[in-house]
Image (cartoon, rainbow, N blue to C red; front, side, top):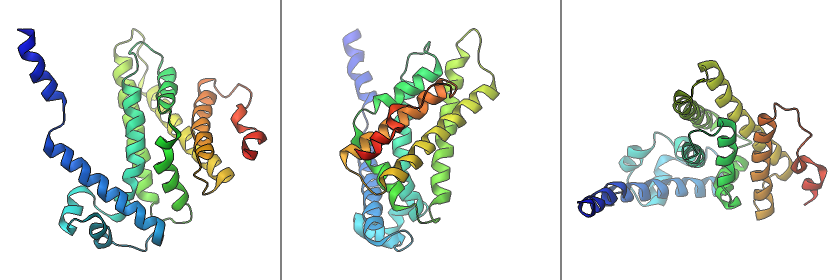
Length: 228
C-alpha cells in the first residue's frame, strides 16, 4: 500500500510544468530589469523596455510585477526568502537566535549574495527604489516574526509578541548594517573576495546580536579585511 502512495506524494511535492514556466518567466523579467539597471542606471528605463528585453508583452509583465522598481526588488525578495526558508528548516527546539545564525551560514556560497550585493551597489545613489526595497525588508521582517511565532508556540515558555517583533526587527537591522558597512568598504567590488566579506559581515552582525553586543568586535570588521 505504501508503494502506491509514494509516487503521488512525490508528484505533489514537485512543481508542475505551469509553475516552472511561471518561475522561468519571473526570473527572465528580473534578469532583464537588472541588466537594464546596469546599462542605463535607475529610472532610465520603462516597463516596456523590460518586457522587450525579456521577450514578453507588457501585459505579461504586469501579471508578475507592478512596476520597474518591484521587478528589481524581487532580487532582494529572492535572497531574503531563501534565508527565511533556511530559518524555517531549522530544528524546532533550537533557540531562535541560533537558528537565524545557522540560516545565514547555510547560504555558504558567496555567489548567493551576488545579485543582492549588485542591486545594492547600483541603487545607492538613487531614491527611486527606496520604497520597493523597504517593502522587501518589511516583508522579510514579518516572515521572521511569523516563523519565530510558530516555533515559540511549541515551547513551554513561549516568547511574547514584543520579544518576537523586537527579535525580527533586530535581525533585519543587522542585515542592513552589514550591507552598509560592506558597501562603505568595497563600493562596487563584486569579486569573490568582496562577496565573501559581505557574507562574513552578515554572520558577524548576527553574532553581535546573539551576544547582546557584549563581545569583542568580530575579526572581519578589522582593518585587515579592508586591505584584502
